[in-house]
Length: 115
Length: 115
DNA sequence: TTGACATATAAGCATATTCTTATATGATGT
DNA sequence: ACATCATATAAGAATATGCTTATATGTCAA
Image (tube, rainbow over all chains, first blue to last red; front, side, top):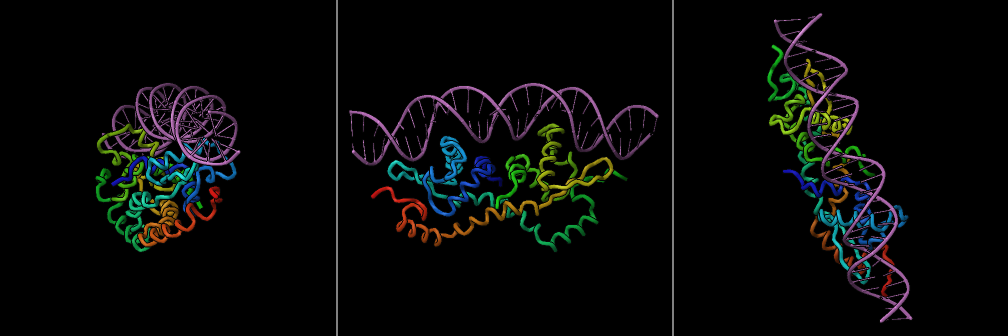
């Protein structure tokens, strides 16, 4: 089964992946997540919203600050999806695949249209 | 390090993930990849181009057909990126993280602004 | 060679995404 | 209460994405 579009969309953006990487080091307030002020405050807030809606981060209030924390479990659907391909990463399986291809040039379902 | 934007962009689209899932079953001609004619021929061709540019598929000519094959190795950067988060998936580590959080409420870098 | 087939590319349009500026909300310290 | 700080939301503009129709390229079969 496929991961939710919201999840893939959330991690598709390099800025947001950077935020996740940062949060993997430890919880942080929203403003701490962009120390170099590479983007405006609303831009960051919007990225955090996308991550929240994907379940990848959670917020808690600490006074007037919002402390964000990583919810790494939310990445599992992507991990599981990719894991299905892991079996192809073994060189011997690759070799076997090549052998099978020699016998059936382009897969089990392709009809032979060149008699 | 972060996977290339082209790679993440390629798998961010559910239609393209479907194409990859289909190719995991075996090589196929471009037209075989949309048996239900859910989209136009150019749409499929454009999706395949994105996948090609991300290195996720390769083409070979077989007569006038183009046979596409999966290049699963190209998924590894995403897999590796996500693997960094895998260590958080263990419940005991989660527990430990909570304990550490009690001692340092929101991570190692947050300055104490509530005296 | 010629016409049909399989795929790719070009151009244009609708929608989505991401940014910006301006403003709202809510907590803090005086 | 009031000014300030931290964050969120609204609205709009610029760009990116994914689709469509039309057309180009290359192969096959007669």
